[in-house]
Length: 287
Image (cartoon, rainbow, N blue to C red; front, top):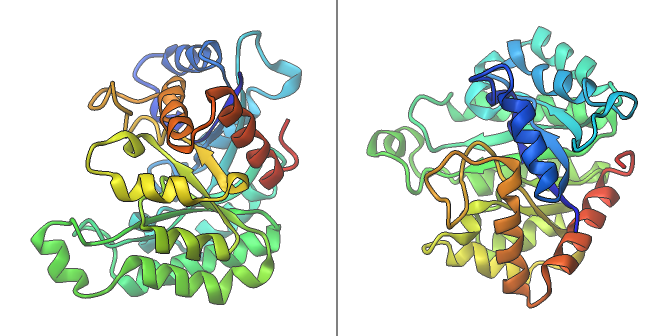
């Protein structure tokens, strides 16, 4: 059984010189043979780090017991104020490289008070969709509403709905290109899932699928068509039950995969084969 972790922040594993290597070897040992490293860094100045990791583990130099690593590059909505002309040019240059298979994670986030205003986030999102369209590469979407945010954030973003704003922008600026993408760490409703699927996206489920209060996510996971589902960790965040609260890592995607398989009434082996095929269909240059 070989799984793909479709979203992990590998550049966060730098507490020791060997930490990332250890994390990746544990992933491979757990049956996770491909990882998509997310290239947002701490902002545009460091968004190349994921691609550097991917380029260091190419086929020619892939150590035994090591997963394939591919990368994305993008400017997270919380860094939208830094989506300058220079940053977008850097994104285009990174995205043009073979091992960079997607642009992201990008989108809208109305959850944190410190995030940029809505207009700034929308402008950065649209600009990055344009870059991805020119590159002909899928996008990885981050969407977080203000529904559960602090009172200060709710006051800042008011009645604005990140999902409604996001889907409207996608409909106008992305869907016509027919390139698709991933709704990363899908945490919306069944209706939002259906609208995302209609817009050409895959739904990727993370560790929060296993949390007791996440029935809405589980409902969406059951309703989604078999050829449009993926699994991810969002490591080092969102460790699944039974390890919730611990530092997450790609090896732990096996728990989310097992939970998703149980929900859908199939074996973990079938789920692994299904999500692997779905990932490779979306990213045909991957092995």
